[in-house]
Each structure stands twice: as C-alpha cells, then as structure tokens.
Amino acid sequence: MDFRRRIPSLTALMTLEAVIRRKSFTLAAVELGVTQAAVSRQIAGLEEDLGQPMFVRKHRAIEPTTACLALGASLAQSFSNIADTIEVIRSSEKDVVTIGATVAFSSFWLLPRLAQLRRENAGIQIRVVSQDTRIDLDAGEIDIAIRYGTPPFSDGTVIASQSDVVVPVCSPDYMRTRSSRQLSESDEFIETDVQDRSWLSWTRWMEKTGHSLNVKPSLRFNHYTETIAAARAGQGVALGWRLLVQTFLDDGTLVELDESELVADDHYNVLLPLRMRRTVAADHAAKWLSAALHH
Image (tube, rainbow, N blue to C red; front, side, top):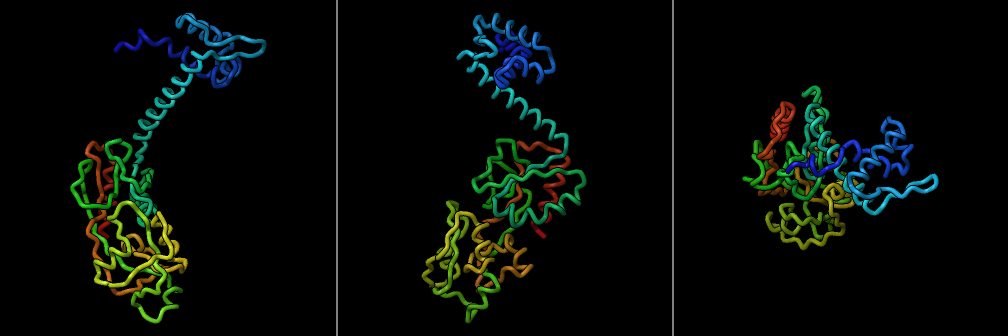
C-alpha cells in the first residue's frame, strides 16, 4: 500500500497535532521552533489538501472542527506509538534486559539479588515486570521470564528449573506463644486466595502431608507478599515456599513451625521467549539467573 499518496505532509500533520494540543498557533510555533506564519502556512496547505477547514477562526481564538478533532486523536495515538517503538529500539542499544516474574518472586527472590546481578554484569540495565497473571512471551516485551509450572511451555524454552519445598512458617514471637512445634486447629492460619491452584492452599497442604486438621483461616490475602508480611508481623502461620522466604528464614524474621514439609509438584523455570531478541546483555543475565536459581 502506497501511503505517500494517501497521507498529507507529515510536517503538516505534526503541526496540526501541536496546534490542537497547545490550542494556539503561537504556542505551537514556539514548541516546533518555527514562526507563527510557518504554522499558518502548514495548516492552510493541509486544509487545501483535505478540502475542508480544520479550525474555525475566532477573535483571538481558534476552535477545531469535528473533523480536526477526529484526525487529531488519531495523530496523537499514532505519534505516541511511533515514539514508543523508537524508545524500544534505542533501549535495545543500551543493554536493557526485561525480566518478568510473579509479584512474590520479584519481591522475595529477585529484588535481593539484583544488586549482585548488576555488579557482576557491568553496564547492564534491568527492567522488572511483575504480575501474577501469566506473562505473554509472544508479545515481545519480556527477554527472560521466571515461570512456576511444569515444562514444556508452548511460548518459551526452559534453560533452568528449580523445585521448592513448602513448610509452615511464623514469626519468632508467634512461636513463643505456642507449647509445641506441631500445628493445631487453634493456630491462626493465614491463607492466600489465588486462582492458580499450583499455589497450595492450607487444605491441600494438609491432605498431601497427612494432617487431619480442620483448617479455618482467620486471615486471607489475594497476594502472597501480604500473606508473608502478616506472618512476619506475628499474625499467624503461613505456608512458606522456602525458596521465596529463605531470606526471612536467614534473618530470623520467620521460623519453620512444623517439622512437616512438602516437595512442590511444579518448578520455578527460567524461560526464554521462542522469538527472543538476542543480545549479549540478555544472554549474560539469563545465565546468571540460571546459576543463581540453583545456588
């Protein structure tokens, strides 16, 4: 398709967008670094090309026509898309690596390790995308993803996997209020409500570990980060995915309550998109994350 025959001068279109946004020929001229007369000529030429006026000229004011507003909205969106694409291209030259993971994995595992990742990979720039819904690797936004589940995955290649163990955890203060290290129905259970049932519920954990307790959670959260925050604050017992909460076990703000533990069915996977934008920085970051996950 020959756009050049269908689209007026890009200079005129950029001028129109500036006039609409600034609501003034004079202010648009200042922004564009040209004279007001030059702006007027561009608008007049565009109106001649389109065969209709873009503005109603009033005393010391201009009012965009309906057609002008429609064209202006399309121009603003199109110029924004172009600017975003150019920024992505420019960023690719700056060794920016985008890593995608769940909010919990980003907060508990990735964030404490970012400083070391950057120290060992001089010049690398990291962008973290955290979301609990499944990350779409086909969209091209993510260079490396850490996804919990069982391979293979249709949209990416697994380069490293790590299993995890799920154990009950609580704060030292909460532990001191108890007479034993065994769970009981009198405990304050903290539950995470998630749609993805690969994240174990208390009921499922009890079944898999052979406990017969009737669990009635007294606190529920829809983010695992809040569940762990409540446990660290002494509000009760939470299910601790050891790889995620190891930092808190190490610093003593969490302790393992019951001796029972459950090896999770799925794994954390370092995943590269099938249509990966290969850069030296992304390759180094992927290798570093793979090694760190196994450490």
